[in-house]
Length: 387
Image (cartoon, rainbow, N blue to C red):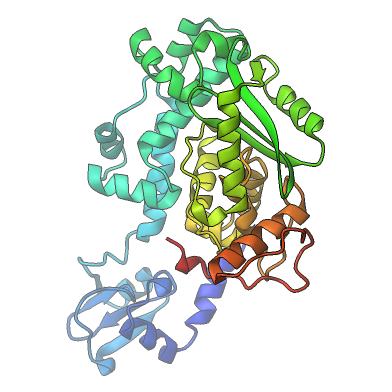
């Protein structure tokens, strides 16, 4: 027989009548599922978190399960419905069902249809879906549709076939959304990005060589390193089918702006970005941009902020995949306890960036030659302090 360790831990937490009564007094949601309580004067039994008026202690009895309470002659409270599944479990089932409906539908269903299918109102369903997944149903559907389109085009399907298999019912709707989904025209994507123009330039900053590349939409890469030619080769490998254009005088001004941001991070970077990634990666990168200059956050804190506390490894993978150094500040993410962990462009550069930002915050001047990690771990900033 399998044993649910979570249920066991919850039950042990409320293993005495004194602890159970305290949970009822405080209306602790964590106690729901561990026991129910009945009130002799009303003949009703409730969840510990029930918002009903608190009964006198001498009239209260505790029961391990709703069935135990009913066998003792009590009926379920109509307010908290203790004989029904816990709301979180019910919500998780509803969201999982909605995701399956989106994934199996030939044409992506609307919010009203999804909410009706899982038995919730539109507004309630929208709130529950976003609370549990971190994204809206529309964003989930768009990410799924984008994945289908990319897979179809990459596998050799015609543009029309890929569009219809992804759930688009007309070519006009597909072409209207294709640039945002693919970052280029469908035909170019099908050809592996052939013909896409990417301008780039390499400069020098206090952290070594820096490469900046951009499409017509915005910056698509910022890389740091010791060897300029290696940075250019890496860019070629990433955009093998694109047309790379270097040596443009106007573009070098953009590089100068990025270098200025590297040297003075407190000034902020308001340049447009064109970064492609999965829906989850995009959420992680957006959250990184909310970490203020001079602050840090841990991988665990970010996972919790995303509503995915167990997804620490997935968060780390998304951070490692970030193609835009400094502007998407993945260097501000550290391990629990203050260790710097890894950094795509070198741990020394990460230490230097953090020291520089900390110095800016404190109104002091960082030593530009210092590229070694600090001798003692940085104090971990509270994620709750961040916006």
